[in-house]
Image (cartoon, rainbow, N blue to C red; front, top):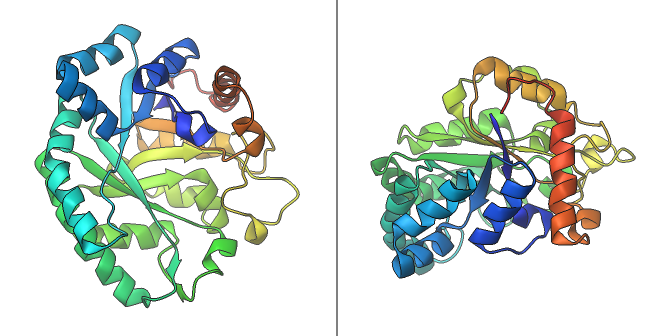
Length: 285
């Protein structure tokens, strides 16, 4: 496993070069990045220039954001699919073979099985393109009951349910974006994590929860930095990942208004300190 930086999750707006510089300065081994930005840079300066940005800083690409708008109308979805092969080819050239997206835990129009079929039909073509370029595709389940309760029809919101959706897509390269917050709010356990194979997990998010709020009252976009409150046992969460042999990026996603209001460098510095606090095993990079 390696410590990975997503500046957007901290409310920090930064170019690819700035993200890499922040990661290098604060001890992150990798970053999440926009493949559309990377492709625009590659079209202008060549893929080698993008590779050199990472190599010169000693920072690796951890995960690229899934760019296809599959939730919108059919034309936008198809336009995204048309653009995906070039994006996937560049990501492969950069040595980054992980991309992920989130799945909402309910819908106001589609019933469960209508929604299940919708996601399979929209995501399978993208997964096939990704597979053609060697990429793994992670789906994130969203756990909070407060969010589920805003939807008329419940959908997948647990670890096992999301594995089932990935299996139904059936392309052989599906896995999870596993978030400690969503394991907690979906009433999952770290033993559930220990039952996974390493290839079941594409990427990992860590964070903590406000201490004054019961689990079923937690609000999805109100979290804290990892280790800030101790509500989530992140040492055991990381231990579970280590035990099953997960070797990918671990990224802080605090959704903290306090962190968003900090100057960019301080926000990243505090996030780095939080990651150091939970990163208790010296064998983890």
